[in-house]
Length: 285
Image (tube, rainbow, N blue to C red):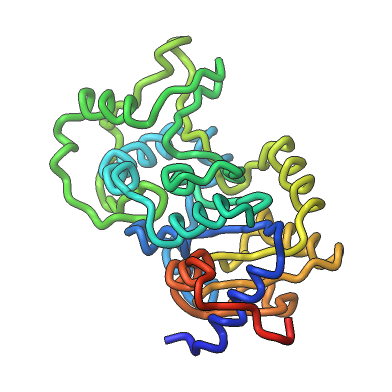
C-alpha cells in the first residue's frame, strides 16, 4: 500500500497545477482487464507486436494477425472504463486537464467521458482500408470474419494485449480475410500505429501545442519505454515543467521526475479527483 504521505504529495501536485498535460499508458487499462506488454522493469514479457512493415508486405502475417484478433477481440471490444479512466474524466470536468494524451488504443478514456483526448496511437475499434482510406468499425469486421471463418469461432486461447490472442502453433493458411467492402481490393488494417509506423504529424503537433499551454505533466500507468510518448516528457522538462508519475516499476523518465508513486493508478487518481472537502494543500505548497 502506498504511504499516505505519498498520496498527499500527489494530490498536492495535481491541485497546485491548474493545467495538467496527462500521458496515460497500459497501467490504466490493465485494471479494466486488458493485458499489457511489459513487466515492472519495462521489459517485454511477451513477443513484440507485429510491425507495420511485416503486416503490409506479408499476407501470411495478415492472416495470422486477423485470426488471433478474431479470438481476442471480444475482451477488448467488451472492456469498460476502470477507476483510472473515471478519475481522469472527473479531473477534466473539474477543469484541471489541458490534454489527455493516451498511448492506449482501447478508447476507454472516451467511454469514461473524457473529451480533451488525443489518441496518440489511434483507436483499435476502427479499421482502415490502406488503398481507399475507407473506415469501418471493428465490430462490423468481426461479424464478417466470423461469417467467413465459422470453424474458428469456438477456439479458446489466452487473451493478449490490444485485442490479440495466443494461437501459436496453428495453421493460418486457410483463414479468410476479406478485402475492403468499398473499393473491393484494399487490405484492411486496424486504424492504429503499429511498431515501425509513424504517428500522424497532426496528432504530434496538437499534443505539443497543448503541452505549451500546460503547467505540469502527469504520467499515469506508463513505463514510457516507447519514444512516441517519452518525447513529451523530455519536452516538458526542457520547458521547465514539473513531471509526476504513477506507475508500478521502472519508467524511462525516472531521472526526470519530481514525484513518483508506485501504486495502482486508479486508486491514486481517485484520491486526486475526489471532493476537496476535508483536504487542503499542505502549508509548504
